[in-house]
Image 1 (cartoon, rainbow, N blue to C red):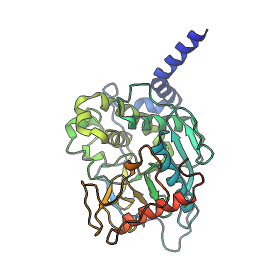
Image 2 (cartoon, rainbow, N blue to C red):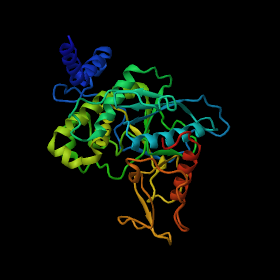
Image 3 (cartoon, rainbow, N blue to C red):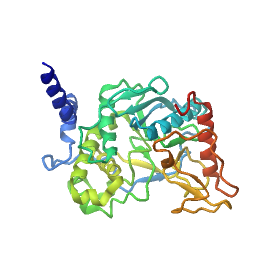
Image 4 (cartoon, helix red, strand yellow):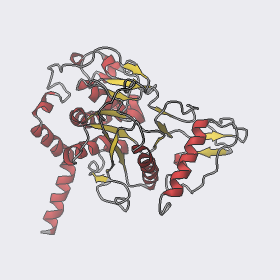
Amino acid sequence: MGCGNLFFILVITFSAALITYNIIISANASLKQEFPGPSNPSPVSSSFSVDPIIRMPGHTSSPGSKKTKRLFHTAVTASDSIYNTWQCRVMYYWFKKQKNKPNSEMGGFTRILHSGQSDRFMDEIPTFVAQPLPSGMDQGYIVLNRPWAFVQWLQQADIKEDYILMAEPDHIIVKPIPNLSRDGLGAAFPFFYIEPKKYESVLRKFFPEDRGPITNINPIGNSPVIVGKDALKKIAPTWMNVSLAMKKDPEADKAFGWVLEMYAYAVASAFHGVGNILYKEFMIQPPWDTAIGKAYIIHYTYGCDYDMQGKLTYGKIGEWRFDKRSYDNSWPPRNLPLPPPGVPESVVTLVKMVNEATANIPNWGS
């Protein structure tokens, strides 16, 4: 009986992705016609046919108008590693501080934990436990768990809001975020290194010509993106399957590398006719962006290295540094030293915000 149960569990685990996807198709017949591949050559009506609209934040309301709030749910995927966990705790601290301020349309929050089991921070951070991909399927590229985790969450969770903000653990919200999406378009940050035109020959394997021009694929990843919940329910299974297909394709895997899953989301969004307004000031990325400006998010993906005169020494460990990767297996200490004089506002603000969070989060470092 014990062996039989073990075999059943293994079969269920290795079949989870395919089974869940088939369930989604059965529950929503329209997905059958929108799954990418040669088996479905019929065109999908596109809601956009020109280059992405580029706007700066601030087009959210007319002066003196009283608008109904369009709340969005913030979702962050994460593993149960120390590295992801401390970032999520800092991120959620600032989410709570900004949520109820004026101009906010921030609703609920969920950490989508794709470890397959609960952890000790479930009471601190609202959490949905998703199953990871079957062993070996991510080929060491753990980010592939992100779209699969979103598929599970969208299918199983009771999400009250009509919009979703997909964010990441290494995001710090510096001011209340309004719902930047408009007129059926998502709102997304444009990444300079996502270049659909440059890789058109590779992308056509996953986005056939009958789906429209390659410019329909926006230069975005899945985060930060604010998108309608119903649209994301269509996009997510395609995003998952395109991610897996790209990883199995040697040419695509080599071309896209660590941003492969970002390309897969951009393709899936275009495949389902969901265009995006590109907000250049959705977020900043220190040390390259030096001022906060109108940004809503600080994304601290890059290391910040400076000498004691405040000069950037990128590529060389500085006399002063802040790099999230310094804390991949340990908690950042409270009260990190501030940068030396001359270091840009963005970096100073980042460290101050991390310090405020760690000073106020109970049981930090344990």
